[in-house]
Image (cartoon, rainbow, N blue to C red; front, top):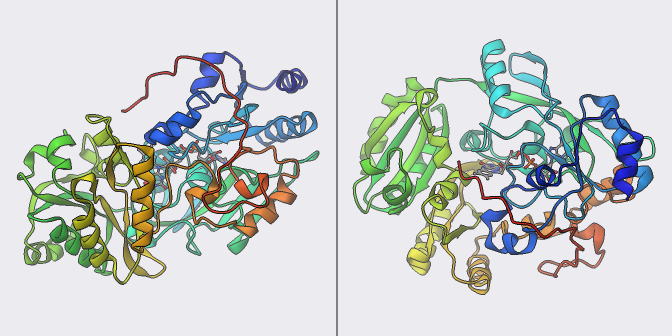
Length: 468
Ligand code: FAD
């Protein structure tokens, strides 16, 4: 057993080999997708290790390289594409001991990759009155490295766009998977091959991130008689560049009323809502804009004081809140491109009706306002789901398919040549999170081509999915 040889070579590392614990740490939120659940439910790693510092990490990568053992980096395991699942077994590498803030100054922070986002924001808020420009709705559990390697955007993208936009990640330190692992310090465009690479292009150890002013954010829920009313308001609100804001999310009727325990009962029947986060001095400024769009505030409180912050009803948390009470739904991740996004939203609302409920996030993307859809889909069959995806794309709404586990199928449906070239240098044996970069395994990969990944699986009773 090759994993056993790595453990034998490094007995001083913090290993876990108990199969039940290793299985638990081999899973993420892949089960959000009925397709990924069918494909990946039995996947497991063979051992879990939690290195305490760079020297231990280097020794681990060198020994794994020598023995040809796959290594899958992991933060908190909140990815929803099966990103952190060790498809081909081997070692699950938990990065949570890399959890220090190295320094913070006004507008900037450098921290280790395994730090939880909530701890990072708390520390920078205290030290320099700043916070990350944007974070995923899993802020309370996810790590910084996991966000950069597996995420893309979130709460704050109303103002700052997505991680890929130049300037949203300033520096990144990564360790390669070679006989003698190297540490590379990347800046500017050199960061791109490691950003959103699912840990296939090296293990990120440190990140330097720009900060935004840390306001005492206010959660506001505004009800509108129609979905399009809420969408037009969020579009106008996102365009108000003078207003400090963090969220502009539309949740269509009847999702809040039927599934949001915390404040859903306050929303009038048949009404859709705009969920927004605003800095206190700007509440007065937006009042007339809400009124002119026909909205009425139904819930308002300080975000920090909320039992369930509003952002945990937004982005992928909308799906989570609905799944808690209805296991028959799934979701999409969609771009409604500017400038025709509002018309396209109206068209697709008419086309799909209740089968695809248009949960939307309004963002600044590429310097302009548009909408991302994380629509709630009534799941019937995998064939119908594929048809819904095709119909969206035919209508001009590209889907970042959350029912696929490779970087290419789940992303831009093209080979990222930069990432592929970088992998040849950083992971020449292809041992980092194998199976996730389709073009590495299959040079003839084309969008939609089936993957023939050999999965490392065991037969076991899967643990209950954790919904809280
Ligand atoms: P993990 O899931 O552990 O890992 C994610 C990927 O990063 C894996 O491929 C892993 O191999 C790799 N990785 C982890 N650490 C490292 C490292 N140090 N070096 C190299 N590779 C590494 N995502 C968003 O972008 N925006 C959202 O708003 C959002 N909301 C979500 C809501 C819910 C309810 C769920 C289930 C998911 C959501 N996600 C969202 C996806 C996910 O939660 C985030 O991307 C999160 O930041 C991932 O962090 P993590 O620590 O859990 O990473």
